[in-house]
Image 1 (tube, rainbow, N blue to C red):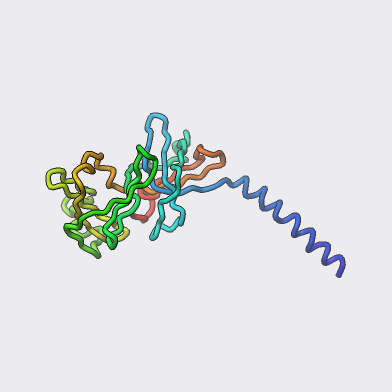
Image 2 (image 1 turned 45 degrees about the vertical axis):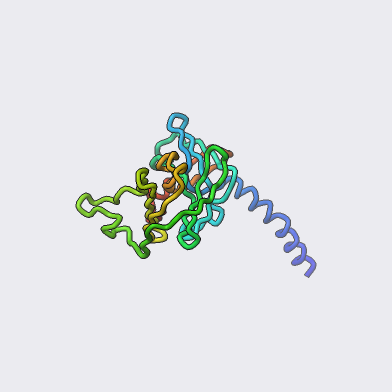
Length: 204
């Protein structure tokens, strides 16, 4: 019995140390939405999904995280499309964007013009079957002061209006950046980079 207790005690001491060493060799993974990409320096800036749930993401981690992409093309997926939209809440009639100037989030109330639910990604409203590609999204109409956004995850097509000052912002403010996954061992330096939006069935 004493020998059995000794081995249990030994395993309780040694096992965590072995696991800690092993985990440090495997590195870490970050996943989030791309809000900036410096093509010259090959550095992507992401807002981490704190829930890591593709169907119910929560892009709320600040400050944004910067990662240098791998030099090896074999370890690097397609370059990311960037966007400022973190969330569109069709029930609360609010849109949350990342503001590069303040490096913070901004939640804006919108005035609903039209909303269609249960819109599949192949619906003629959002998909051009003749050209076999998705229609432009988002659509920013500066004359009418309206923005139309299709969310494939939420299956919603929403048109809303905002105060005039918001139409001075670039169109990709209202677009969702690609979902990307970074594997790294050294902080700020990706060993592998995957553009999840362009390689998985995951849709934003």
